[in-house]
Length: 252
Ligand code: ADP
Ligand code: MG
Ligand code: MG
Image (cartoon, rainbow, N blue to C red; front, side, top):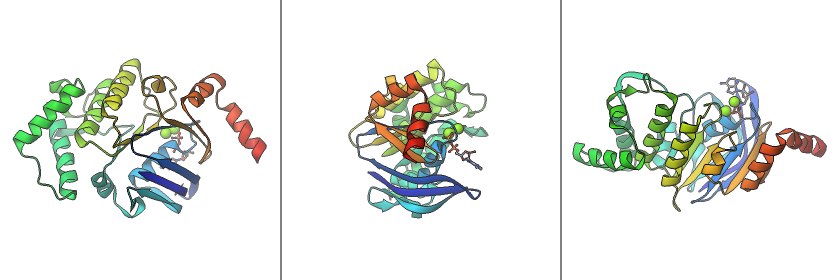
């Protein structure tokens, strides 16, 4: 589904990604872990097509398409979803209208008619039930005055509405409390199926007790320096990142 080869990226002339290789197949959940500043959020942003990141080498192929040639909107249309670590607040725009626009933009890209009010309401009710979402959140301005847990729930709800092929969740700096861990993990587990894939950026080993990944990768200094299964996350929890840094130093 997603094949990243030798990906190099810079921000403001600073080299951050230094040769990332990653292969994600449909049905898989991959967790990216690693010390602060290693480039995890940069990787998520580059795949989703955020501005400010310049790809200087390598390729990103998604379902047979060169993702790097596409705008963020086109990538969303292709089925890539990136969660927001710091969700924006938009006064005056209700969550419902925001989600409706997003859903219909994706449909338009795919050559589908927009959902009419009845169809949209039906889809919303279905996903709200699935995500155990409180209706009152939807009529409030997007993220305005939302608690951390409400923002998380809203984000996972958006993901459920868009039914992405590849969901990228960057949880690194969001300070996940128990409530948020439960919301994210329930949501992700309910959406997990054999046709989609999830790239989960986290430094919370605990989250991986709830969302059991197929693969865990350690990103350090712009490279994936170690890959394994969920056992690797447990080893990191126990030993910290120092042993990884030492291994890298020895190989150099
Ligand atoms: P992580 O998510 O692993 O903590 P990031 O991808 O956020 O790491 O950051 C990697 C490095 O790139 C850090 O040194 C960070 O300061 C730098 N960086 C990220 N975004 C920017 C930016 N917009 N401008 C300048 N430096 C940035
Ligand atoms: Mg960080
Ligand atoms: Mg980060």
